[in-house]
Every structure is written in structure tokens, then in C-alpha cells.
Image 1 (cartoon, rainbow, N blue to C red):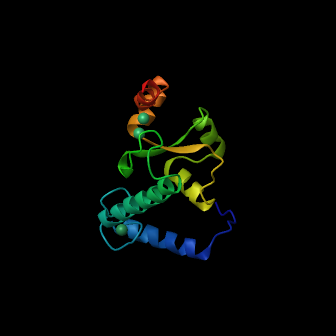
Image 2 (cartoon, rainbow, N blue to C red):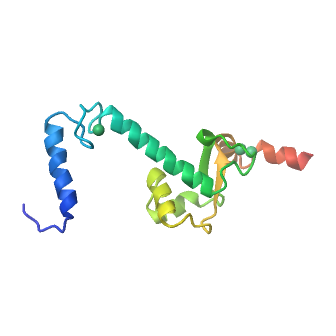
Image 3 (cartoon, protein in one colour):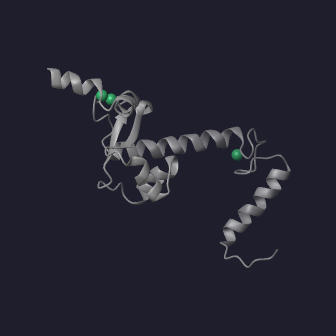
Length: 142
Ligand SMILES: [Zn+2]
Ligand SMILES: [Zn+2]
Ligand SMILES: [Zn+2]
């Protein structure tokens, strides 16, 4: 099994380290600390979490930074959603999900033509389940 693969020499080196570190029971990312998950140490797990969170913050900010429906700006409650119904189809077409989707958006400079809106969990859930949000009724009902 020796297929000629085009590889970045740096990637190869880090992969070599990765196996050496893994066989020692060390973290496969930094190689310095014993791992607590399959491949990562506690420190790296936190770092990955923080960097993912920071990425999501940047993306949410780029698309308005608060719920389009109720104005909630508590980051932890906010999600990025397609305002049109074919959201999942669009994502399938793009072949990117979750964190990868955020990275994809960032790399492309947060395109505004994808029909993406920021919604909080409450409004998103209500719209998804009932097709409307109680906040809209408040406004409509006066
Ligand atoms: Zn580590
Ligand atoms: Zn909301
Ligand atoms: Zn709402």
C-alpha cells in the first residue's frame, strides 16, 4: 500500500508527531499533556471550544449580532438560520454544517445573499414548530 500522495511536508511532520504523541498517551494536538479525550488534552479541548465560540461570535456579529425577531443579543441563545424554508437544502448543497459552515462563511467574507438571519433559540424554535413567533403576534395584534 504505497500510493504516491501529494502532501505538505509540514502536515507529514505533524502527523508523525501525532502518532508518537498518541502512542505515549499524550495529547495529539500539542503533545505536551496527557490526553483526556480520544485525541486531546484538557487544555486543547478548552482551546478548541474557545476558538469555535469565537468563530461563531464573529459570524453572528457579522449578520447583525442579535435576534431579528425579539432583539435578544445573548450570544449563547443565538443561532444563524436561513430565513427561507430551504435552509437545510441550501446547506446540503454547500456541503458544510455547523462549525464548518461558520468557517465557510468567514472565508467568503460573510455573504449577504444566502438569506441568513440571526434568531434566538426561542424565536427559532417557535417559527420552526408553529410557523410563526409569538413576538410577531404581539406586533400584529397591537
Ligand atoms: Zn493538548
Ligand atoms: Zn428572539
Ligand atoms: Zn420572536
